[in-house]
Amino acid sequence: MDERFYDGMLNIKTAGDQKGFNRSMHYYRYEPTPYSALKLLFEKYELTSSDRIVDFGCGKGRLNFYLHYLFNATVVGVEMNETFYREALESRKNYLKKHSHGKDKIHFLHCLAEEYHINPMDNHFYFFNPFSIQIFTKVINHILKSVENTEREITLILYYPSEDYIYFLENQTTFVLTEEVILPSVYEHNQNERFLIYRL
Image (cartoon, helix red, strand yellow):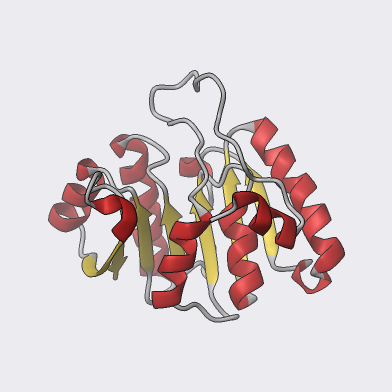
């Protein structure tokens, strides 16, 4: 699937991987979720305009723009890398030239994932294996604390999930695996090429 086609349709620039490495061993290098994978996932898994999705390690914001375009959902990108954060803001400006109704629904924050304050409206959280299990644990605990304060159904979407993430969720939380979406063209060569959906 042509990455440039979708970037062009959305009037954004999200292609390319991170050059070099993060200084912290807890944060992993940026790589956008392929549009082909997003298309497959969201043909099976639908959102609504009242949903609010947080993408931890959003990079240049591909998931955010794609989900707003498909579902008119509110999207929040959390990114620690200042360069990617600025690129996401630039893409937001360009996206809004074509899709002005997204002005109040597309947000980007420049901060560490564990410093993000969970909004009581946040109900879907996306992770493309962005950081170590230590950071993941902190983020999940923040989400669980938020649910204690404001009860609601929560969904976690994991792409290319690490065994550490899976073990933690299934053995130390009350999240339940409800769906697995396999990418058929690549899964037979790499069994990490799948989405896992957990619900609370």
